[in-house]
Length: 240
View 1 (tube, helix red, strand yellow):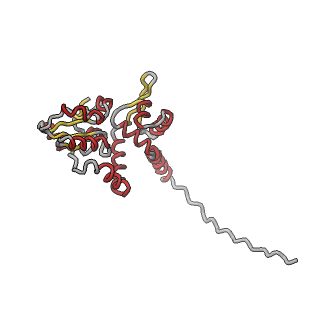
View 2 (cartoon, rainbow, N blue to C red):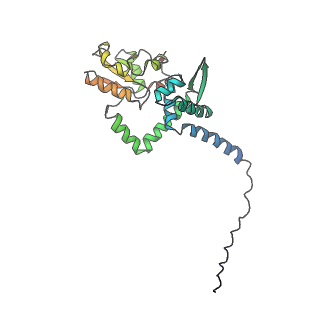
View 3 (cartoon, rainbow, N blue to C red):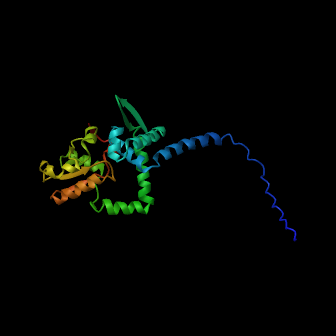
């Protein structure tokens, strides 16, 4: 019977000397862990939508769930993650818990994410071109230009967000004309003045759709370049 051949084991490489502890790395790593906690809080489409809704106004859990199309349980879970990341703050009122953005700098984080997506993701640019700009390809009006035209009485501004959001803050002098009421309230808008529509932000389809419908009805219409959160963040006048 032939003898089995014994293959010699490969020698393991020497592990080498252990790295010396660096006392400067520990606090830096801890800081990056805290940054990662915030990044994980932002790392969900559902949570980003909840932040977008909270950028308009304070809301309770049930209202957020309804607006975002989520279950109450799922909404609560996402809000707890946002709270743990320091992005939202809760407030109890009786049986309801209301949430708001921790501060206005959360808007800066969302704006940076949006800019990075528009700049570096072709799919985002294609979606904007096919889904939004198909409804309104004209250049929107910048905030400073709109403010000057409002002060000169040259435009009619309409807020096409839901009444709850309008009630907690809107551009001074803006009329609340939710999109689903627009056709029935065209008579309230003077034909001789340009109409400027705005809603939740630069990706909000409500203002794109409102401008398209206004033009079909014979109005000269444009949309605001951004939305109420960006207007407020810029320190421009807001009424409530």
